[in-house]
Image (cartoon, rainbow, N blue to C red):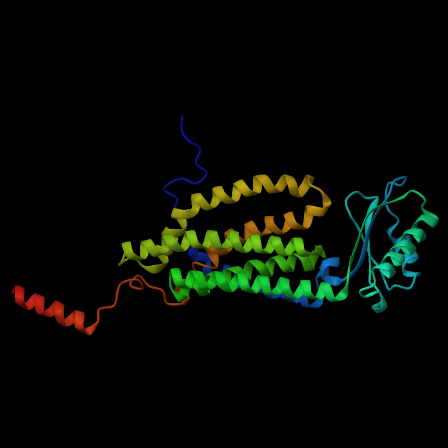
Length: 327
């Protein structure tokens, strides 16, 4: 019985033939992602925005009256609430800002949540409270700063590691690929206004790890082939390296997607953002390893003699002396 092979052994796809169009598309997507982040912003959860989140369900109704809830809660004087469906159509999360005097005052925060719940139950006695989370503005600001530092540190450590293991050109290529992956993930959250919380930071760090692993596999094969095929043109050598690692890349990505896609469609609402980020990260991470990390080596002047040791003047003199002595 023959083993199933998703990628034939003699695969010879000319990936780098389309490197310029794909790079242009990727740069446009990166620019569009950051434009969305800067214009629409991210839909911060309570972790990052601060304030209070109350999750409620209307047990006797098929659908939560979002417009009515927005008017009722807004009339309490705590600013415009952010009300979103959370799980089933009759479940919502209500986020409100806390007044400055509630900073560091748990009693006042609890009083505000009791007022909101009482206002909801006045017109909807069937309301069930599923959870209340409160985060102060100071703590949420610390969370945001630490999250940014974690992402920057992960990307910098990745680039440094690849720089030390390979050459500086490889470090630049890996860093650009990671920047591409993170940018597109942030763009998706800005476009669809999915809740951006600490869970999503964990997902982005997982994406960085996956993309790095995929990139290292490709780079390791490129380095081996640079030493093996000294006279092969660099474009053909990169295509060869990508094709040789393609079976591993496809199997790894497919295995992860088989586990994640059912969770994306049938899992709990609380994990939707986390799962969506990782699923997107698998696609863009695989894409960036092939079309971002590999082609940039051409423009950074990596060639087939990049890993050939340079002959010093002393070594050259010794070699010439040995050659004369042997004549």
